[in-house]
Image (tube, rainbow, N blue to C red; front, side, top):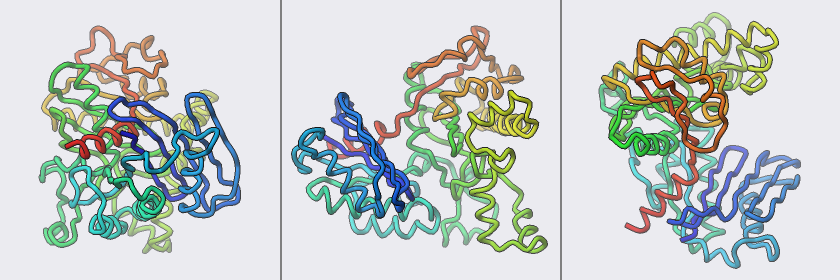
Length: 394
């Protein structure tokens, strides 16, 4: 079964064509800077790699370009779009409506549109991707995999806010959680490695960052809440902040609500603290003695350590912590900083193992560590393809 995975962002399209259940990647690529004359297009197979800069002014043009590359007479990988059985779409926000992977219908699309108010940067772009894919890949099943679905198991005492009840019952204001596809994938890999149902904390660190407490394969708490804005310090997002700061900025400093929103989402986090949003730049500057960068890294690690403590309490124990995503998988510096002074929890890192770079699951804890410290490369595309495959097979 050939499954095309599409992650349609606000200005980009990531895609991957896979054969399931063999888990064979036929091709992958990305189109970014959509809407500009200088859009970047990439297309990669086992034998070919293609990149070009061309105008891609809309998502429809972008997806048509993807189809053209798939069908290219020389470099393509299929002869007809009818070869594709299903198109799996990553959708950030499924609200309370969707706890499982779902075949897309007009009703499902209406719910995704309705939830755009909760994910204005993501859901509208996903909906465009779905509508265009329905036109181009007309014979394929269109399937939605929701980032929020994995966190639907979070109990009410953890997902409900201490605000008037009607805001939950009538307006669905609650913790939803995000990065669920990644947290699900790496927690299942960790459970398989540990060979038992376990109490695990998964730590997804990229430009967006989140943590999840996973008990016996189910999410029981997570750092992102009603939106992907809160929790840990991120590339440009502030994470947790006293709501009084928002009202102070509006009432006393004269900012508009939209300006405050922009500051907290696009100008804060590591960017606001250092002037850089890429952790590689921040680490390099810190090593050169930049005090702002040094402090930002300490703040970032402190908030993660604090959450490890909270989640160890929520889980009533801890078998493993899992690092994943761009920073979690590649920054030995941040992993070491996070795991320093955590011996009370039985967390002790092996500094030599921590330096090893690999694309495989690996342990980086010392032999004395009670808690396993795992680095598990995430594979959201495989997880989406796997969920789509099992839905259609069953």
